[in-house]
Length: 222
Image 1 (cartoon, rainbow, N blue to C red):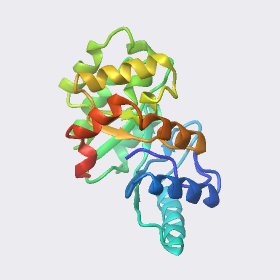
Image 2 (image 1 turned 135 degrees about the vertical axis):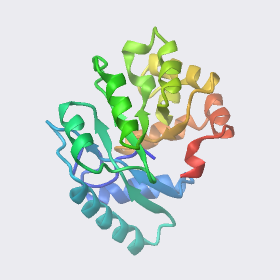
Image 3 (image 1 turned 45 degrees about the vertical axis):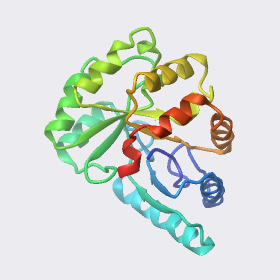
Image 4 (image 1 turned 90 degrees about the vertical axis):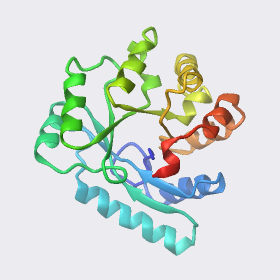
């Protein structure tokens, strides 16, 4: 429910050949359905629903032509900035399923108004999903913050590669702690390129990953 497989519109796959290489690899690992989620960032990746849907159809056609047994749909990974607030108030946003809204924030600091923005999402009828909370360093020494977000109705999405150590020791440690405390609602590959595939293959050996897959992840119901 979190990947970057549409070519040429963000920092994920660059060409349709890249897209198909990643999809073939993921299919070989057992993935059967994707919600790919290109970045939408006001100052950098200025994607629109039209751009994303057009790219999605290109990928679907290539999958069909190769006969790969997977389904693919698209939403977006929204970056919380001033542009996002304007979109939230004035546009219909791209969601996973009917109303699950994937968002990310800066790795440098948390927006001061994050709770207000989360509330606005909910008022608009969205169910907010925070992408890769284990990768935000400002909460690594404040683990209770994850519980606070859950209590506010925010779903937490763990990157599978965090458990492989791909993003460093701290993200791995927090990811494992989130699993141990049953605070993970969804998992995603966040796959951009082949190095992420290599990390995923390494992560299959992690004990925490096996425990995670035995839990009642929302992925199973999307």
